[in-house]
Amino acid sequence: MLIDMHCDTILAVYRNQQPGGIYSHKGHLDLQRLLESGINIQFFALFPESIYRPGRSLHRVLEMLDFFWEQLEENFDLMDIIACKADLSKCLRTGKIGSLLAVEGGEVLEGELRILRVLYRLGIRSLGLTWNYRNEIADGVAENQTGGGLTKFGVQVIKEMNRLGMIIDVSHLAERGFWDVLELSNSPVIASHSNSRAVWNHPRNLSDEQIKGLAQNGGVVGINFVPDFLGPPGAGLDDLLKHIEHICTLVGDDFLGLGSDFDGTKTLISEIQDVTHLSRIVEALRKRGYPEESIRKISGENCLRVLTQVLQ
Image 1 (cartoon, one colour):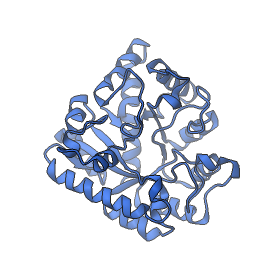
Image 2: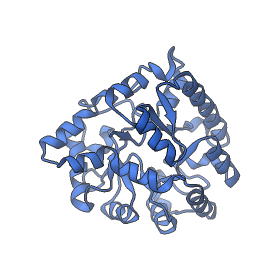
Image 3: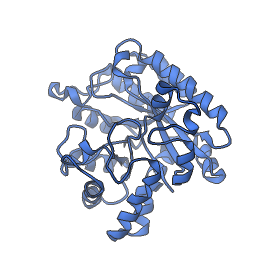
């Protein structure tokens, strides 16, 4: 089983308007290559670019959401949407790509819980609470100096996401907010595309204490493939494996997954230039002596556990 917890492909395809849409996108992944790679479930993040903040993020997300549903209709023989636990079983049984819709950036809610509920009804099942900057929910990692955590509205969002059965994503969230989320949430949370700060000191990576906290919560860290988050210039697959090894040593192999960031970055490590190269991570883990059970967990089973626990 293979699950990728984060890509920005919907934005890339919608912005470029290439013939063939998501079926034959020229970026890091498309439906043809997803099937070739063996991915069972792909998280598709809808990310409203900075020029749409503040004020037009919701409009932009709704445009992308409508575009996704068009693409789903055109490719219904190849992909399906995951909105509940039954959909998980269905996609694994049929062999279709299971698509889980996420929004990256809580500014899309415009401070209104009703918008969260509307997005849920439209198929959104995960929300990244912030991007790098401050919004009505909390501070992002680029606002870390303020020490700001969840706002009163942010507290309401966490409680409502728990009630609805939505997956809370703390990637990009400033540390104070991260701890507020873990204290409040009664469901496991994810860091869909983050790495280890102890291995490479980058603001987007998680400290050892954060990783331990996420593990105690039962959540999952999705390892990000962006070189800047992995190591010094020229970082590659060996550096990615260092993050996996460190987290496994720190908390065990039950709290790791893959969060590629495909189509959300111009640069990837040289060994993994698109989704068809994901098997190289599995091969590298085998060469390093990881048991098959651990490889299955990291490749997708850990994320599947969280989906099964959180989705209604």
